[in-house]
Structures are given as C-alpha cells and as structure tokens.
Image (tube, rainbow, N blue to C red; front, side, top):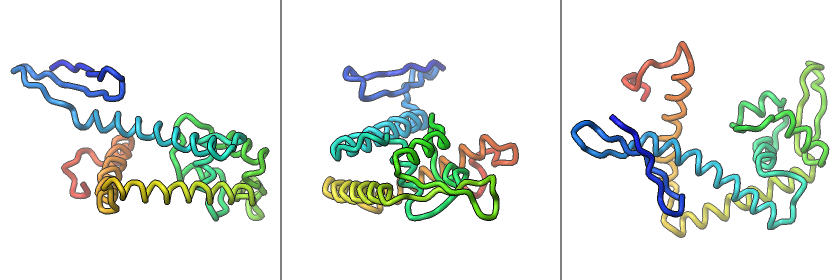
Length: 184
C-alpha cells in the first residue's frame, strides 16, 4: 500500500489516495475529513479577521475574538474558558491578559478561592460579542440561501461529535478501544 498526496493546480484541494496492491485507487475519506476540518477552522478564523477589519477593530485578533465570544454573558475562570473552546496554538492566559489590557474583559479574583481569577465581558467586550452574533446570523441566512439548512448542519454536527468522541477515546487509556462499541 502506498499513499500519494494529490494537489489541485490552485492548491485549494488536497486529496490523499491509497494505492492498494491490485492497483485499485481509493480516496481516504477519513484523512480527507481531517484535512477539511483543519482547513475549515483556518478559513473561519480568516472570516472572523475579515469581519474585524471591516469594522475597523484592530486591538483584538480573531482567536481572541472567539475566546471573547465563548465568555459570552457568563462569568468564569480561565480554566473553565479553556475547557469551552479549542484554541489551537494559542495561550488562553496570554490572550485574556491582552483582552484585559484592551478593555474587552474584566478580571477579578474569586471571593471563594484567591488563586482563581474570574473573567467577564466589559461593555466593549459585550459590543464585540453582539457584532459576532450578528455575523453568525448573517452567515446562517446566507447558508440557507445556498441550500444548506439546519438539518444539514445537525447531521454534520452529529458526525463531528462522533469523531470528537472517537479521538478523545484514542487519547485516553480508559477510553474505547474501537468503533465496535455500542456508543458509536
């Protein structure tokens, strides 16, 4: 068996092909899905960056904006915030510090545990949260206009949650050993 990476001329499409001994050519849907998830994440962060640029907001980056959006109307610790989102390649504590310096987030020590710092949005942070919510609503309307409806996204989310559970189980010694288990 031999793997070959196929790339389109404009570098927008990547496929992995597996050559089997009898000459049959198959696309690895699993590997292609992994690449697509990664690429979609990068595109989404580019979309957020573009939205910030259009609004003239330059004191917060796209990753920080998504961290801010995950805080929402809640008050939580940095640890709780980390558990809510997956900030690949980012240091949540550093980003919270920068957002505090730019008045998007307020920090205060927990009354019950002086080691713990709780964060919440300032008025400026709440304004940006609203802006991001409006962007999501616009995107949902545009998706419906091109035929991507809620049931399509429900199916997609179901599959992604199954992948998430599978990958989590592969990194846990007490996790599932295969997809043969009833939960999948």
